Image (cartoon, rainbow, N blue to C red; front, side, top):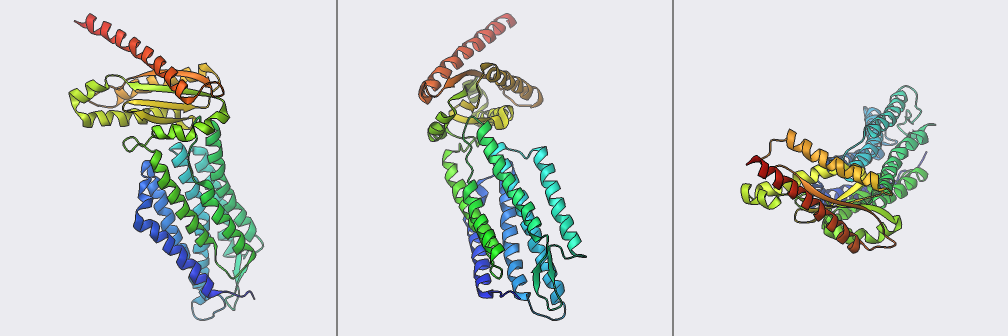
Length: 382
């Protein structure tokens, strides 16, 4: 029979709850409102609190007999195992939403398959103790497939890290996410509990990782534009060193056409709404392949990982097509339009500042063409 260190278990679970409650009362989890990130973060908070309580109950019941104790032990253990399973999908959803703005169909199917396998193992365990067993003396023991279940959960956690690495590789920008701050405490604490039975470290590790994640996301808000939710101008300074490792990148600069007229005619509230709408169209157009920055006022910069001009120009055409589509499908007082300068640049030869000056000139060349065309149309309509 393994020795259970109840006092240490209680301290660890209480610490986990206190850390999570700190995130709740500070309101840090509410900072990430885009695309339902705050709902996922709230889900993690609830999960950790429930799991810490179930963990304390589970260890308290171990080795104690009595009416209903064994049934309660089964229930608390199953809550813990299902909580372990749920943390993986929440982690994958959080990274996908934060980095890519959505959870891909492939990721949804992958998570569903892995969770289904774990659920099947848990269901079989009711009839054949392959994951865990509780004997007649109400003593918990691990089953032969205990590590297989853990491996499936590790695969879900690793999937989130892979999503992050792929996004960093594909995007011209450097997407921020505190992967190591979340994963490392969990990995260390999982290893401790796996090899040293009788102590409880997994959920306090998740609480520590979650708290570290929230602090890092709070710091990220320094680089977030409050109106549009895009990265701001300071972001470009932050990532300029890492961008040099990519050498060639595609960069665009966009300026909203007739923005002053929108403000003067419809008011600044409609002007702000137009900026938010343009930001949404730009994000939709480039997706995970680029990073959109609100550079200043109605100017935006897009950083993409690209080596050929044809691909960059294709994205320029896609943005203009999506702006036209927006105007057709949204009943707004204003019409969205943008002038765009785009080019492929070697960061070994040109600095970010020189690149910005170059695409700024290309953008204004595009703007001259726009106004020349529209002025001719207005003259012909008279």
